[in-house]
Amino acid sequence: MKKLRVAIAGLTACSGCQLSLLNCEDELPRMLELFEFHYFPMASSPALMEGEYDAVLVEGCLSMPHEKELLQELRRRSRYLVALGTCAVCGGVAALRNGEEREQLRQSVYGENQVASETYEPLPLHRVVQVDAAVTGCPPEKEELLRLLAGLARGVLPVAIDYPVCTECRMRENLCLLTERSALCLGPLTLGGCSARCPSLGVPCEGCRGPVPEANLAEALEIYAEKGFDKATVRDRLRRFCPEWKL
Image (cartoon, rainbow, N blue to C red):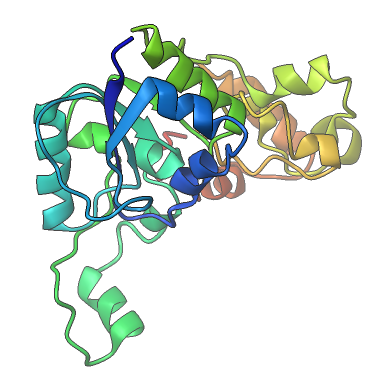
């Protein structure tokens, strides 16, 4: 069986999504039987971009011109481009200060020191190139990454998740932190796929996986209001990971 040529790149991000893949230690030998990780700067050097790729996985959002050039080049060379992690899918925490004046932000971080690269408001990948699939999460779950690679090995993309974290909470018979403890849990509006990791530990969902499609916003906002959380509070919490949230 011919190995698939895969590229993995990181843009503006913490590299946690790539690290989650490298942490699949038990599965790495099997991965190397199926894939040729040809361009993977975090894991190998020198990292040379050559030829065409069956798939490219990209972590992080776009905030510098050279990142846009890299992303567009990877898009041209690949059959499939996968947004890896919440920053790539939604903008993530790097986009928290979008809407504020960039020069003031630069001064607050760097002072009078010169910054080599021009920066702009962080953008998710889909704002610049066509994205064929997305694996969200901050970072993505190990099982999701393995399903993605297993699908690519068979020539298919993963089926997109379309249910909220609340569905997984019910499946695990968790206590509802929102209705029973009046905690600001974003499970009703957040994309599932994490097996309700945080609520299962008694921690309210923070919305790190981004918005669930066709969320019942009206009903959710009514429940939040009953628990003492106004619309602005809910909106600001949701936009910590997804600045493009429309609420």
